[in-house]
Amino acid sequence: MSFIPYDLTEDKLKKIQLEGLQWTVAHAYNNSPFYREKIGNAGLKPEDIRSLESIEHLPFTDKDDLQKEYPFPLRAVPFEDIIRIHASSGTTGKRKVLCYTQRDLDVWADIFARCYELAGLTREDRVQIAVGYGLWTAGVGFQAGCERFGAMAVPVGPANAEMHCEMMIDMGTTVFCSTASMALLMAEEIHKRNLLSRIKVKKVILGAERHSDAMITRIKELMNVEHVFDIYGLTELYGPGTGLDCSHHNGIHYWADHFIFEVLDPETLKPLPPGKQGELVVTTLSKEGSPLIRYRTHDITRILDQACSCGVPFPRHDSILGRTDDMFIYRAVNIYPSQIDHVLGRVDGIGSEFQIHLKQRESGRDMMLVKVERGTGVEKADDIHLAERVATEIRRKILVRCQVEIVDNGELPRTQSKSRRVFDQRNEQ
Ligand code: DLL
Image 1 (tube, rainbow, N blue to C red):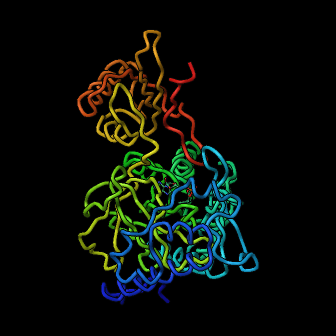
Image 2 (cartoon, protein in one colour):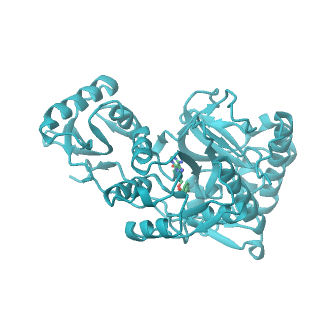
Image 3 (spheres, rainbow, N blue to C red):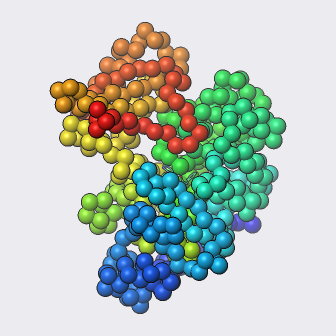
């Protein structure tokens, strides 16, 4: 049995998208006072959606709308049809709460099962889930998808490394699912404890935060896995499982029969052509509880329009390159942590972990300190040269001067959830 509709043609996909868009706009307009007002204010009615291009006239929704409408923003079904809620912590203000109907949970499990299929799993696989359960969508998302797919779920959740290692060995885990930080932490633990010969993990599926190529290389090396897959998702759009890269690892195939992805210029909010980086904006096509109309994710990516040789009839977007709200301004230069990461990935002798600390000198001038881990097997005596090389590369590529401190391998904190990279103390001093 296949969860991926391999016979889907481009024409059929477009038809599904148009019907889904028309249904979503009518559903939201008729059942959610919030959307009725928003769509009405844009001078539109559901019957105005006559083609896929009509999407460009629809108004945007943003995280502020979810916070304003707390506790049940965007709700478009009666309470008796809502069978679960999830929430993600906003960094400021109230949590974003999303409602799910039975159909929403079914769609989510189905699309997640496609992710496992795309990663080449079979029902013989044993899937250790190392992400949080509860209000967060992660744990239950990975689990419901695994059960729908038919593999064995090992729902360990966010336990300590000891427990994960024990379960990995005793349960014969073949697939490990976690955040990128947790996968690195586990890979290092397995290496430290010399457990490689006792574990059977062949695949890692990771997501929830941006990660560098260096991190993937290290996880692959230390855990000796065949593939590391990148899974995308956000609470507002069901949760994890909206797409996954296939074994060619050349972008994330996303399930375009359940949502439309637009990439827009974050300043002008005008569409960008394939290949150009911008903000991902999503519209759902079948979501009942909390439908999304042009929801601004603030994630930066680009649409990849060349066909992928894997044969999966779904479009691709690039891995998430950062978030528009991660950007910081240092000495009048706009910088994303991913740019620093990118530079570090090209310097030999350093590890995959880094932190950016921003401070203000007494003179009022900003100061940036980049802490980078020394690579394994690299002598401490080389630190001065290594730091100089990193600082020179940052100056060459990003055109800013900064200080670089080389710290011991393993010194920067490993977290089980999402890692924090930027520590901006400029306004605290
Ligand atoms: O992080 C859902 C998830 C859990 C996805 C586990 C994958 C694995 P939220 O907590 O709502 O949901 O955070 C969503 O996390 O807007 C991105 O900024 C970031 N993110 C999620 N997946 C990736 C990824 C979950 N594969 C936010 N690469 C999103 C980079 C990611 N960033």
